[in-house]
Length: 412
Ligand SMILES: [Zn+2]
Ligand SMILES: [Zn+2]
Image (cartoon, rainbow, N blue to C red; front, side, top):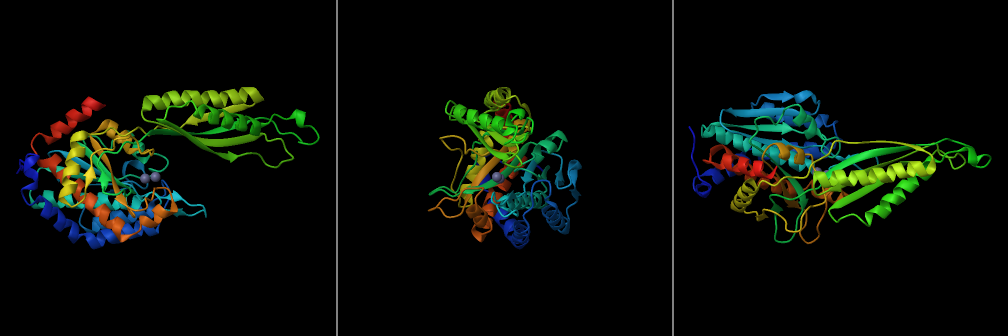
């Protein structure tokens, strides 16, 4: 049976109550898996416990899970339904390194996993109970902070046939606003740069050396000067990885790592060319050689306005006031969901957590603390309800799927 609902009709039937009921039913299990991920923070491509815990939960609920999907040891895939359109939710669960050498969920990816698992369970149960034609998929997507797991998954064909790919990311709570349906992010790429010269005794025969640290400092300084001439839509930031062995040896090798970001892929490519000028110029000036290779680019998010408007409307029904987009542009962050949304219609909404009097930003210890609270969990669940309602609309509302595809093709 195909339920025909227009966008206007959607609030009328019992969809919102059904969503609340399914979410409430699984709340205990969702809290447990959220805590399991939060308390066992694992770095990119090593999210073994998160992978196993989520897969076990879904298998326990009777779903057939493909563990280690698409050749990635910490990816998984589960799908429910048949025919019709296909809605996909992405679950991230990688953590960030901390200063003491361990890891923590300073980007709140435990909450991303929790909201995407919840959205999947809700939509799957609506498909089952209402006998809807259509499918929902949950993909476990490793290595967002570094590595680009979704780029691996895209290349392996994991998003083929998907009509809408959605997820929600926690962010700072701002007064009067619970979230943003379509935030902007920047395209990003990174590279490790190695300079090689020649070691020499720094006291006895310094003239016999070729100083790789000098090349690094020259490059770093050139980039700092270049920064003044960059448009506000571009960012460059880096760290020194290695600056030599001992002061009494002229350094024969020095290395650093840089990120470059811009509002579009094209602008990012132009920025990379200017940075390469800084690397090569420093090598030439010092007589060193230089090696670098850019990592695969995370593309900027392509907004899908109809999906964003739908989510904003549904969030209101669950008591959360979302805006569709932010006026003054990009958050400054970046995500490999951008690459997915170049291929298929998608959403990467932001939901606020923490205190609204004192904003907490991702990649800080305060955000890691906020990501473990019950308040953050509840907000992740509320986001899941909106994502599930939007997914329900993709599967059941006449013309809506065509509308989001038209918008996607127009923008990409
Ligand atoms: Zn993140
Ligand atoms: Zn992050």
